[in-house]
Image (cartoon, rainbow, N blue to C red):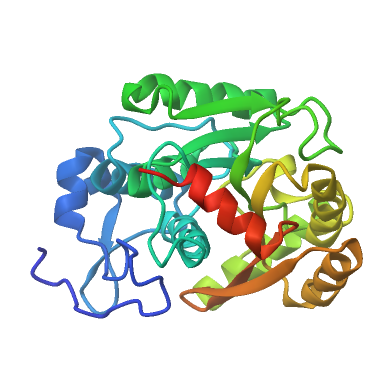
Length: 320
């Protein structure tokens, strides 16, 4: 470990997270030597990354995926979203706990557990983490052909994911499940990190506020350090409209999936989402709080299956 590494634990992250302690840059550089050029020191003399440098953020993500999640290589097209790995891993761990609650407290592992990642993006991070941590199999969908092409390239760079992760183009931007879920398929989980903003201008203003807060001063030129294309960052009506549409469409696949879920970033959207779930007649809904640093978000999980149906589902599918 680096001599100046602190022992501060990130207690808001999930207990099984590999990221609860501060980054060990020695190990990360061993995994990816090119990361070294982006290492700097903060005012306390501790090693850190320049998070305002998009190339540095990509290098950090790549090194984390190589060190902790078994990748050989990883790359995304310029301008595409490079998501913070700890937050993505937390979603996977929390949703694993939902399955465990229906499996006598034991997280079901292995390829029998099938997950649909809605809007997997060019980065494919959720399937990478979920397969590495629990051996689950994934289908990742996206409306962007270039994102699908990038995800397929990542799979080719990492042959160990062959047969475990598949990507599919969603041909209709206003559909969530139709066109992706094939006849007769069943999924144990769906996960989603929906576009947050309602417009390009809204996304730009959000990035401005984020950078201002990070630098504690007004930033004149806004550069997306974590990247993001229009489809990844915003959709008409924003996060609320996207999730409400997903809920409506999920009812048509009520018996094809055990648990549906989505990340909800904006607390003010919760009331509308929970009301929509009640009105559509779900058997159970649950809110799971998540926290990374100063940011608080939550996962909403719902199911149309009755308790005895979920018990039968687990007995039938969640065998090692």
